[in-house]
Length: 364
Image (cartoon, rainbow, N blue to C red; front, side, top):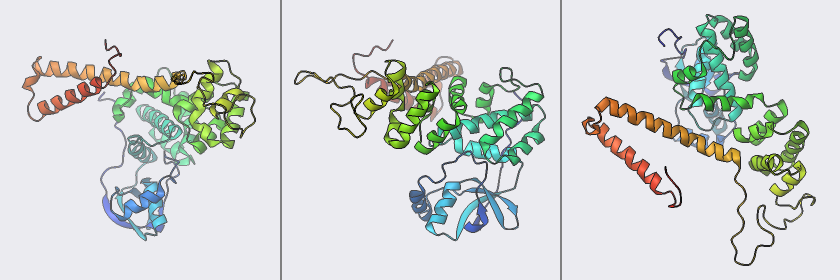
């Protein structure tokens, strides 16, 4: 892959105390939830427990954030006059984008829509670089008010040059490898699906922090059902955590959307909102005294989200064991210190995890 373009990121820099008022947020930050956890971050800033934000100079004593918008907002909330930042030389929009994306994607709290938009933008930009369209892609990024606004123009740019989604210059698998992301191409494809959600679903997802699985579940409903469920979530935000079970009730059990919502709220179908529940959802109404309550059916999408990462981990373990066998000619005792000890610790953790499984589980 030596002929592929290098990932354009900002490098180096110096630590400097920057006036908080001289810093502005980046308009195309992959993260759009910068208001979250400001209070705890403000306390951590005072204790010196967070990394320095990364900024670039954009004018005389003016700086734009590349990474660390929440830390900057926390400094504002705490009343700090200055904030220690890593000041890097200003670069092309593509370099700023990849620096932001690499900083954000390796954190677990990035929202699904932000994560998907960042992943797709980075993939499209890297394809543009491979096709000699770097300047045009940078111009699109520079003119976009938000990162997701750049997705359609970037794709149009590539398609005019003969690029197609099914035969890209840089495949998604290669893209994942180049960025060092811990996911498969199948997982990336699933993550990108949420970008196809309509505006109403995306707005609700951002407002109520819906998970990627909940967004995908909503997308399977017909438009009228989507409208009903989104209105119900607005009226009762606790339903955001029950989206998948509601959709499962509609799609797999034949319930009406109203009945599925009522059950998720602990009401009997057709009971008015606010009515006290007769019985917990999923409980058997006529269960004999002392009998264990009936367990609700498993959510298929929740099961998929739980099993797929485990399957990928199992495949990675298999591949790594094969690599170790090749490296040591089948004699793992040949591993030099401290790697032999680390391998023993890893195997101990795996055996311990498997040992916690119920005896009724079959491990083939």
